[in-house]
Every structure is written in structure tokens, then in C-alpha cells.
Amino acid sequence: MISSPQAWAGDDPANKVVQWVKEGNVLPFDTIMQRYESRLQGRLLDLEVEQKHGRIIYELEILRDDGIVYEIKIDAKTGEWLKEKVD
Image 1 (cartoon, one colour):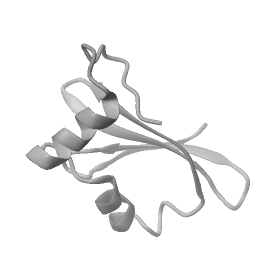
Image 2 (cartoon, rainbow, N blue to C red):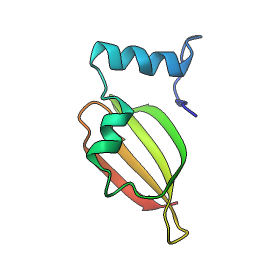
Image 3 (cartoon, rainbow, N blue to C red):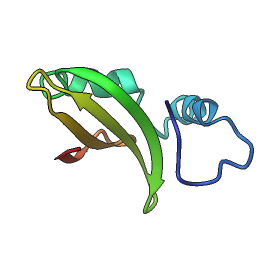
Image 4 (tube, rainbow, N blue to C red):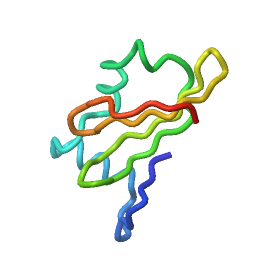
């Protein structure tokens, strides 16, 4: 699921992300997954794309093998790991 707290003015959010990737404004999600393969172990429960404070953020919920769900935020443009917390 891809969603944003901002109004999308009628645009489909998934199409917006595809457009941003084509324009080079964000990294493809596959690139993020490869970059952090060892840190993103587990089952992806949810993926959202948000715009906050002028940044586009990939927000993931991962269920790890220990049974704990983690919320992870990654800058979609730079790939910078921003935050990880127990959800």
C-alpha cells in the first residue's frame, strides 16, 4: 500500500512514485531493499510513501523473525536510514 498524508490532487499515489523514480527524484524501492538487505530481514507488512518536511520518505513495517514489528523510515531520495522503532 502506498499512501501519503498530503492530498494528491486526484493523482494515484502509486503513479506519483513511479513518476518520481523516472524523474530521478527518488530511488526505486528495489534499490533500497538491496542496500539494506541485511537490516531488512523479515516479512514486509506495509509500505507507505510520505512527504514530510520537504522529504519523500519510504516508511516500512517489517515483521522480524523474533515476532516484533519494526517501523523503519528511509529517505527515498538519498537512501539514508532515518529511523527504526518498535511499532
